[in-house]
Length: 461
Ligand SMILES: Cc1cc2nc3c(=O)[nH]c(=O)nc-3n(C[C@H](O)[C@H](O)[C@H](O)COP(=O)(O)OP(=O)(O)OC[C@H]3O[C@@H](n4cnc5c(N)ncnc54)[C@H](O)[C@@H]3O)c2cc1C
Image (cartoon, rainbow, N blue to C red; front, side):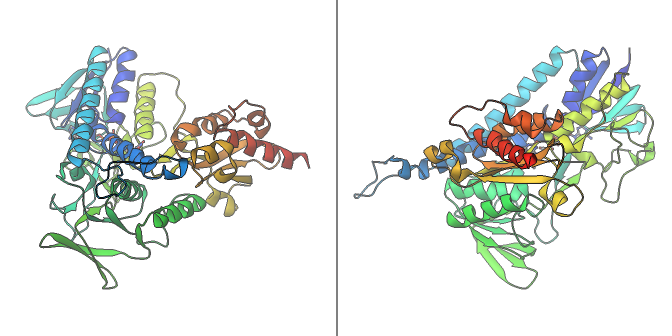
């Protein structure tokens, strides 16, 4: 029986444990914090649980135009929704631990041995946990990553925070400064604004979400500003300090921004130090990420790696797929190498931004020839009925064949709408095939088939 040892119990680790166990391997999973890893306990799951509340708040706050009126405010004032942050935080943490328990049960049911502890490699085929030595034919490293700390802006856990410390806040930040306007920064800035904080978003670049679809970023900027967020573009934070009960962010050009709290979202560093990786022959890049190929092999025979510690694409879905691919490969199954062009991703702002396949930047640069159609959500009947007018559906296809290459959906619950496009991209469907697919009337997904019809018409001429 092949012996598999897995270090790290996040999606990269536990999904590979499930595959290895199903293929008949003898599997040991070592996790230091809890099954589900940072994904479930501190990062993805808690943030999306918080966002479930902020989205509900946003819907309630913006429902007046649909004829909803609140009563109950004092002194003749109309009441509105208010957030109970301790309750929200309690729900977030309980849900995370419940999810962790579900994963532990699922993995244990498959016969995986789980060890709670900190592991390191003593050899490519020997893993140490305390005094115990686990001999393995295959080792998978899936140790994840940790919030990057900007020197001069070290979190104190009270007012200068990383996102893992947010759920211990006793009350809603009055005046939150979010440093970093990537996906994590944008999601939290959007969420706390909806929960009722004043929010300043400090971006070192020209606009928010600098690595995402530009049209989508523009929509979000407009929405953020309309809702009262203070956006500081081309503003790089040099340091953050406590001043009594407030915080002061100093920018590299000398300006300062004050608030009650500061959330740092300036990236991640891989958890690869002190693991004995280089001694075991595992090559790291200059930033400490483990170098892997498309079937998750490292430079050391028998050692695979998956997830954030590889820096390939920091998503739970990618971590899980890298882990599964590693096990299929190691245990002799037929395997399709990782294809990043197929990854569907979502930014959980309001509206959400979901993407799959090639990007418009690749098309605009001439790297990928494609035809593009973009339909504003404001023309979609369901969106009109629901009062959601910010957003669009954008579709890219090959010029001659009409094969769908990718798309962007900016809409409420875009994360649930992207699957159709994902299937079209992965299955090489043409715009004709998408156009002939039934969508419910009225529905936002109707804009996907409508976009395909527009591209189909273009092919006809
Ligand atoms: C705020 C936030 C929101 C996110 N939202 C999403 C989202 O909506 N969708 C999405 O797809 N992705 C999301 N992500 C990304 C996602 O969380 C990560 O890509 C995912 O957690 C990576 O999984 P992993 O298995 O590589 O690592 P992790 O989930 O980080 O798990 C690694 C585990 O290994 C453990 N470990 C480390 N070293 C050792 C050791 N020596 N011995 C034993 N155990 C060890 C760690 O303690 C950790 O528990 C989000 C990330 C952040 C920061």
